[in-house]
Length: 127
Image (tube, rainbow, N blue to C red; front, side, top):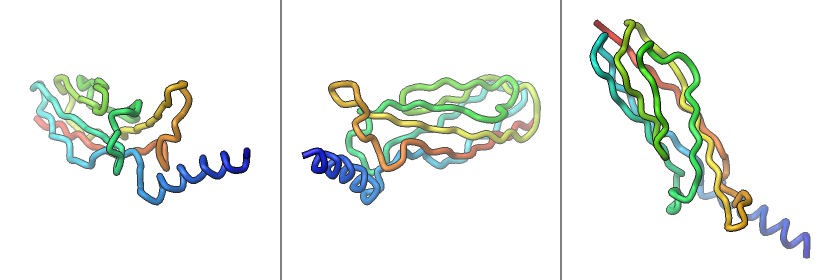
């Protein structure tokens, strides 16, 4: 009986990989900033090939240097960048996403083939 339970649990993970159910940060070019003017842009994410992707917990991290004066806020399935750039330059950073799914008992509900992803972004600030 335990072997059957292990086999069934393993099948879920195999199927998630076969159907390419993975977290995805949408690829986009962020808007350039102008020194001293308001800036706003957004990066969004989803669970690729998952109709119930709203049932997942999304946890983002921003790694690297944002332009001075630009901040970020996490809003459910997105990261919003905002502020007033204070220095010109090209700023490269990464957005990392971790996802989890929980069943009714609060345990990991075998979320995806991979539980994280990362994408690089650039904000260029000009005068």
